[in-house]
Image (cartoon, rainbow, N blue to C red; front, side, top):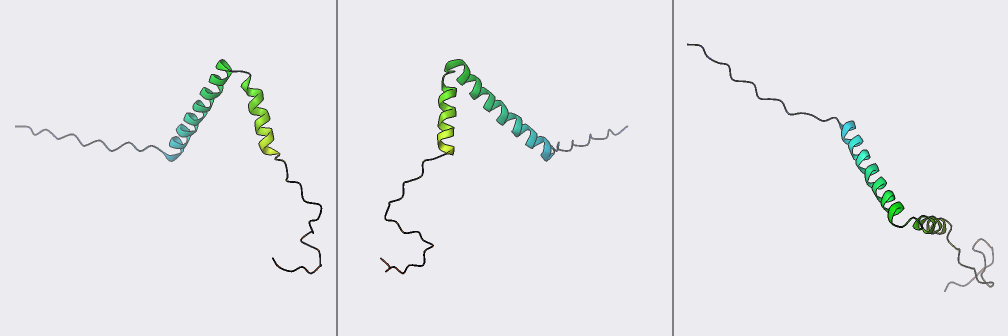
Length: 81
């Protein structure tokens, strides 16, 4: 009587870290492309509003200083508040 050898259990498949990172990058790029294409199809005029809004956030208005403000680097003695 012949004995059959039991098949060896398959080793788990190891996915390299670089492949996982690449898959995550591809998924993020696909999501971004989907959002941009949806905006382009449904409301193409929003691109101008988005660009001006981003430009406005990049260069915020600075608050106007009061004319009586004394610069912090002067050597004049002042009482603490």
